[in-house]
Amino acid sequence: MRFRFIALIGLSSALLSACSDGPAEDADRVREGQRVYVKECAACHGARAEGAGPASLHLDVVPPDLAGLKQRNDGYFPREFVSRFVMGQLEKDDPSSPMPNFSAVGLRHVYPNGGADGEVLETDFANLLEYLEAIQW
Image (cartoon, rainbow, N blue to C red; front, side):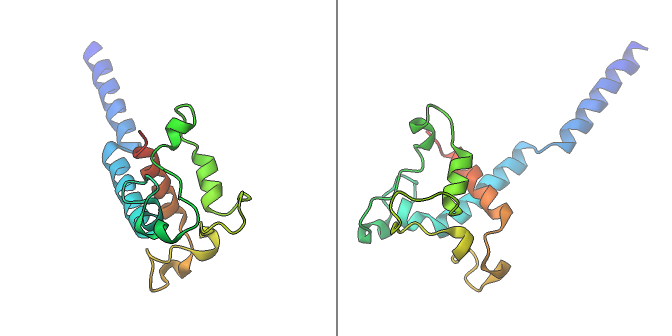
């Protein structure tokens, strides 16, 4: 009887872990988010997300360091704020800011031929947030 109970617990644990996102799926999301970041964000925010990409030389402002968001927010990654800011749902301090409203412009570099109707796909954007959270120091 004891063996059956232990076997049942082991089987239940295996089934539950199979239903949840595993480390491989997390790594895939982060990798896809990095792909989106490289194509859409790195030109301004830099390859390491520290705010000094090559396109930033032509801007009147220095793009913020995205890798230090967690440090600047008392150890908390401000996922909701980042999401709302990038999607143009928050008023910007400077209305002439060069930061695009991705809900309006879409992922032009990820889908250069207009794939996904030029819209920001929810999955792409969620993956981008996963990547940004993963690179915090």
